[in-house]
Length: 77
Image (cartoon, rainbow, N blue to C red):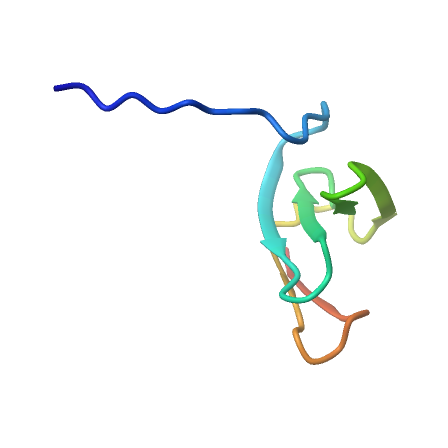
């Protein structure tokens, strides 16, 4: 018997290639690192971009929120 799932799109936005995503444990934020070296923070409740900044000219391969401090992220490129 095939598995049938109903998928509803909640947040859709065109962007460059996304390399990594992380969810903040207490805030409604999604952190995305892009191939271009840009980092974006999205609010998934309001479906708006909170902040976007260019970190490096290299691909931003992995990114992570630091849970005990709302404004910190760690990025590996």
